[in-house]
Amino acid sequence: MVHAFIMVKTAAGKSEGLLAEINGLESVADAHIVAGNYDIIAEVDVPEIYDVLQAVSSSMQGLDGVTNTKTYIAMG
Image (tube, rainbow, N blue to C red; front, side, top):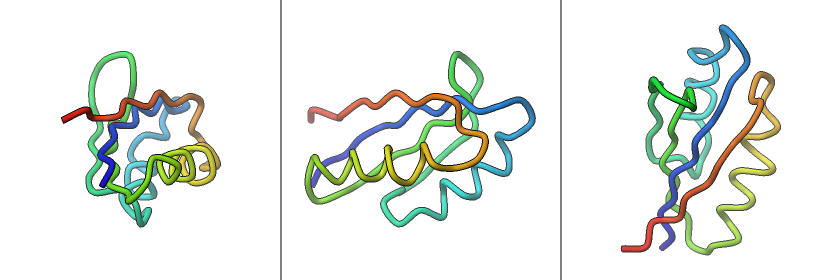
């Protein structure tokens, strides 16, 4: 199992709506609106490392209002 944290930057005023959409994605275990350089942090649990790419590039980055993402893979 691969555990990753996806930092999501959103367009102004889009964070709350995107939080619901991101939480609804199959691979997302949890997501939160945060203060800082990014607007949402999502935790992803997937079977393989390539599934992280699928979750980010195909699912999250395709959502209207997502402007940037950064992915961190948990090492332990």
